[in-house]
Image (cartoon, rainbow, N blue to C red; front, side, top):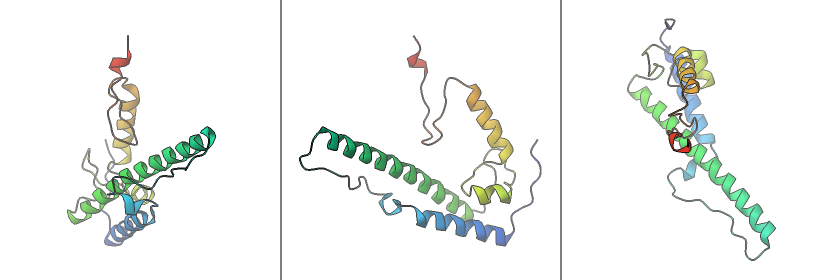
Length: 145
C-alpha cells in the first residue's frame, strides 16, 4: 500500500512549474517540435565514406529530435495538469507524488511505488512490452516460430 504523501505547498508547486518551463525552453529542438522535418546535411558529391558519415549524423540528429519532441509533449501534459489541479497526483493510485521525486523528474505521472510495480510487471511480461522512450507496444508474438 502506498504511503500517504502530504499535498504539495504553493511554493513547491511554483518551483516545479518553473522547472518544467525552464526545461522546455532549454531543449535544443524545441522550436522544431511542430515542424515535420528539420534541416539535414546533404553533401554535394563526396564519396561513400562522406555519405555514410552524413547519414550517421543525420540519423542521430533525428533520433535526438524525436526524443525531445516526446519530452516536450510530456512537459506540456504536466503543465496542463497544473491548470486542472491534478499535478503531483499518481495516475495509477491517485495519491500524491513526493516532492523529491517530482523535483528529480517533474514529468513523473506515477508515485514511486506504482512506477516500480509497473516496471516489475513490464519486465515480467514477454508479450506486450512497451518502448520506454516512445510508448509504443512491441508485438513480439510474430517473431516466434
